[in-house]
Image (cartoon, rainbow, N blue to C red):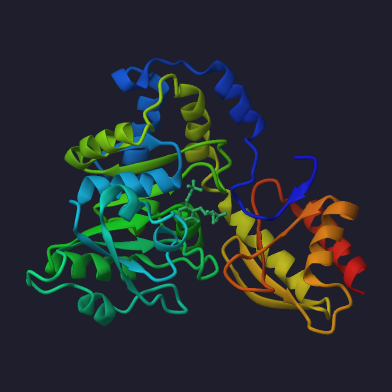
Length: 346
Ligand code: TLP
C-alpha cells in the first residue's frame, strides 16, 4: 500500500503471495460444489475451528445473516449484545430478511454479558412472547475496543445456552485476533459454539470473504440461505486461494499487529494533546485534548492531505478516533505516524 491507512483492518490489501495464488488458483463452479480451492478452504476452516463443515461467504455480515436464517424461524427472538455488530451495524438484516426479533443485553466494559442478564432475556413459554432461539457473542468485540473474550467465559455461555435449549453463535470476525491475544488454539475459543463466522478479509488480509462453520446439517441450511441472499458464487476459487493463505500464513502473525498497536499507543500517549482511551489487540481509541488548536476534522484532513495517513472519526462516539493496525502497518509506518501526529499537534 502506498499510503498509511488506519481506518480499519478491513482496508488491508491482499499480500503479494495472495495475488500470486489468486492468479494460479484452480477453479470450478462452486454452486455445483466443484471448485477445488473453495472446497479446500472450507475443509481447512472447519478443521481449524473444530467443526464438521464450513461455507465460504462474501462477508462477515452475510455469514452472520446466513447463520441466523439457518438456525431460526421467522418470529423468533435472539439474544444479542446491545453494542454488538450484529445488532448495530448489519442494518437489522435479521429482522429485514429473517423476521427475527433482537433482545438486547448490556455489554459490560470487559466485552462480556452477565449470565444473569442473559437468563432474564429468555422469554417464558407464553403465547404473548416470541420464542427465544439463540444467543450471539462477539469475539473480539468491536465496540468494546477490540477486547477479546476468553475460552472460559465462552464455555460459561455455552453451558447457559445448553441449559436453556438455546443455540450459541459467535460473530468471530476477528476470532484469530482473540486466539492470538490469549495464545490459545482458535478451536478452544469456539468449542462451546454451534456456529462461528470469521473474516478472511480483515487482519488476515484476503481481499474478500468470510467463512461460516458448524455441523453438516446447519451448513446445508446456511448454504440455502446464502443462495437466497444471492451470495452463492461460481469460480470463487480465485478468492478462496487468498483465503487459504489468510488461514495458513496470516493467523500466527496477528501478534505483530497487537504489538504494533501497543507501540503506536505508547508513542501517541507521549504527545501531550493526545488522550488514549483504550488499546486492545489491534485496536486503539484516542481523542484530542479540548484545548488543541486543530479541530478534530482539521486534524484528520491534514493527516491525509499532508502526510498520506488515513484515520477516521469513530461513528459510535463523537470526538473519538479509532485506529486499527494490520499487516501493512509496520514499524517504519508507526514512526511516520508518530512524527506526523507530533508535527500537527505540537
Ligand atoms: N466491521 C467493520 C464495520 O462494519 C464497522 C469495521 O471496520 O470494523 N462483525 C464484526 C465484529 C465486525 O467488526 C464486522 C465489520 C463485521 C462483523 C462485518 O464484516 P463485513 O464488513 O465483512 O460484512
